[in-house]
Amino acid sequence: MRLRAKMESERKQNLPLGEFVTLMALMMALVALAIDAMLPALPIIGEELGATHANDSQLIVSLLFFGMALGQLFFGPLSDSVGRKPALNAGLGLFIVGSMISLFASSFTVVLIGRFVQGLGVAGPRSVSLALIRDQYHGRSMARVMSFVMTIFILVPVIAPTLGQGILMVADWRAIFVVLAVLALMLFGWFAWRQPETLLPAQRMPYSTRRILHIAREICLHPIALGYTVVAGLVSGAFLGFLSSAPQIFQQQYGLGSLFPIYFAGLASATGVASLLNASLVMRFGMGVLIRRAMLVLAVASAAFLGFAFLHAGSPPLWTTMVYLVATFFAIGILFGNLNSMAMEPLGHVAGIGAALVGSVSTLISVPLGILIGHSYNGTILPLVSGFAVLGALSLLVMRWVESRFRRPSLPG
Image (cartoon, rainbow, N blue to C red; front, side, top):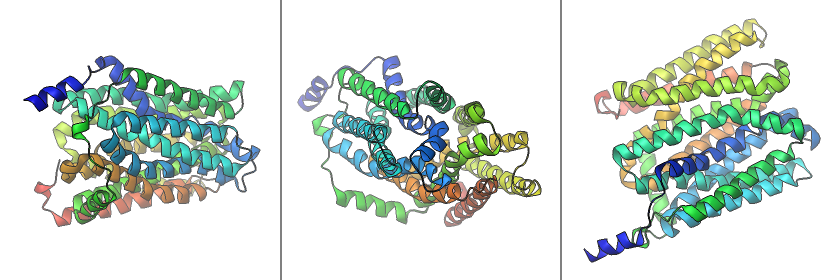
């Protein structure tokens, strides 16, 4: 009783729900903003700073993902050891440092270093925000909070390229890094001033590399955890290939120029709608069924459109490309909502580090695949659609392997 009373006295009053949801959504959305707001500027940065090849500008996206993959391995366990606030503040601080490096870069290599540091830093708010929500809410309350958070989060990829394009109309590309740094600084102050610590000293665990390796081994030995982590990496690889090459496809190949953010917003909206619908669909059909159907749509649609694109020398009419991509991105919205949850099913007893490892490993799988797809861009959409088709087919094979290890009724979801 005394211990419980002591813990209660140490715990500060939670933030009002609306403020907490907004703060957590902005923390998680920082990574989407850091990626999508840069997209309209990629060709400009590469040209101004002397990138060797036009496709090299895509590394501005890929290096952020790579840094984020490594950062998750650090910030997740760190927050369990020193508390949520120091870990998240350290991540925001590192993100601001990375923004400053890129802002004052005089060469393309220095910009890439800055983006890598940004990725390391943004892993803090990305991973620790989930732990903060989990500390304060459970069961249906947590699901409700996450629904509110994701509703705000989904809006960011829709508006971020427009924000980036708007900045480019009144300033140069360096101003985008100023906006990112200012936003991170504002979140740093808001979080430090208003958000109480949610992990009490009695609940903290020492940082242990040995424990991380033990849980990594557990993931590798469990077919569901390993299989769906790999599938998440394959799907994310195709998605990263799109993010990297989208400015060249829309701005240059299809000649849309400054209209690119409008078309990108339409695709992001398809993913957002799918994510919102997934909340009700998963209760009716289950995660396993939705993943299989969405993956089948992605693979079959990509294979069919690949043949159609070949008939048009790799540049089919824009409206057909948009129809294909909307269907693909709707499927991706369903997949993103379920793959990580499926991979985490056997890891409930190690949820914190388990989530960090699943997120990190899937991202490390996706980065080289995304770079390969993006750097294969040759003035046509054939490399991109081929990437979706091949990685979709591989994902179906991995899922078939997972299901062969378990009877279907015993699979989660």
